[in-house]
Length: 103
Image (tube, rainbow, N blue to C red; front, side, top):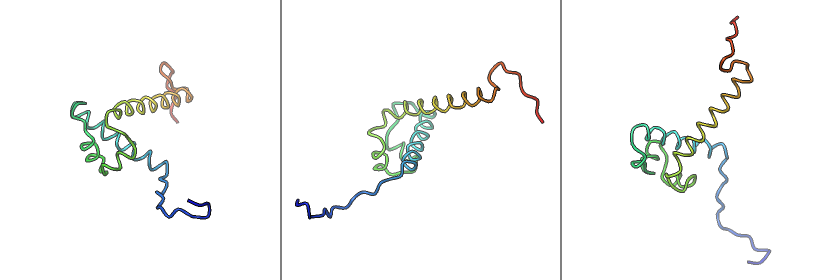
């Protein structure tokens, strides 16, 4: 292609990161619910997208397979717990601290 030629191939629009993260969270939540009800061996992309209310192709835009999703869910839960723990420590209301009197 010459430098003066412009490609007419359609460009895929960029998806905002916040949207991708929200979609990823929907899949993780769906996996958590499925694992609560069924075993890990019964986990499938079909059951995940059905519960998440998305298309199969949307799932594959975010993940390669369903196999690593439970680990991602555990990681997200641990990250959230650590953030909460830090907030509690910063407030001075950690375990063993006396409760502050209310107003």
